[in-house]
Length: 95
Image (cartoon, rainbow, N blue to C red; front, side, top):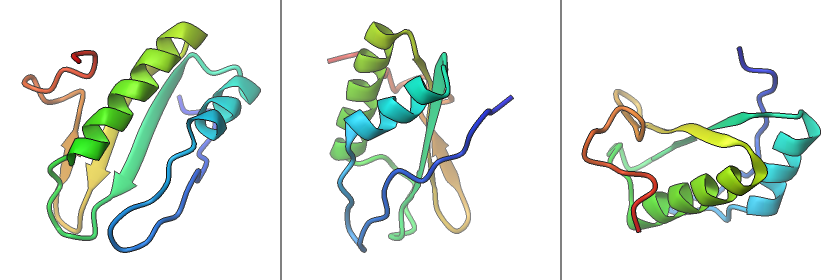
């Protein structure tokens, strides 16, 4: 059961800045053991960008150190979604 929903950033049409310290400070404040990240793509394509993949890997690595697993990172559009945890070919922990 989610214990909190927090908006961490709000971006422009093509990108936003993700502050990893802010993400993890929220998780630590709530004594979280897991995180789910969610963001939208205004382009209409739910496919993750290189930046999405890299940020997902960074959050996963830092989360492991802090004892907070990255449960999923979901990208939504107007009619579809992409779930990193659902995609067999996407390995969050690969470098």
